Image (spheres, rainbow, N blue to C red):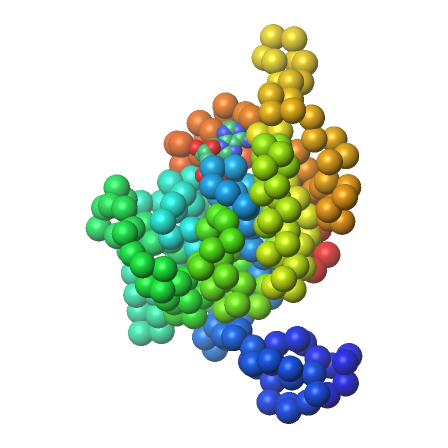
Length: 273
Ligand code: ADP
């Protein structure tokens, strides 16, 4: 096989060429799904706003007229249904599991839609969690999507590894907080992405600063990060402030009301795929 015609996905290719160095673990989704681009949203640690950024990216892409889905792979800390006010349980038809649909038509699947009660913790071993992530990829009736956003579990453990090895991603957006710079957490997340040959589209720095409601001055509560990402060889796609109105929107299940433009560069980058 010539280098030009190689998709890099040996799992979906029968050619026994010299490039087939190791057996790929990528698994195809089902034949009834037509998903054009898959983007993972990742973070080195929890609580930095990865799910918030995933939701806002989905809202921004849907507003531009794209068909968007969110696969909530953060099985032990699922926050996506809450942000969109989804309380319905997942249904099934003869093809597979049906995702919920938000007011603006974003398709969502999350473990919360399978549990009898959202307050129940998921106390499962890694392989069980990884199995569910695979099922969300393979057995959900996504139909036709322009973009499937995968809200990955934080860190560099078993489940993010399963996501990276099972789903052939087109790119990843890394969400950080300024504190991650100090503790080298960004570096670890980026190194993992490099090791897995993932195309990192760039970094979104969340909780970057606050704006004083009285004087409008910006305060970088966790320290300045300007220029700090230059050494990493990836683009800084945007900085989001700590915004109490955003937190309230998410808490009330109204993330679709989000109208900010801080993620415009990230959306543009996704559109170039
Ligand atoms: P993660 O997915 O990284 O664990 P979440 O997206 O669930 O983090 O965010 C953690 C909490 O912080 C949530 O309550 C969310 O509403 C809030 N949050 C996230 N980003 C912001 C922000 N920029 N301003 C205010 N609150 C935020």
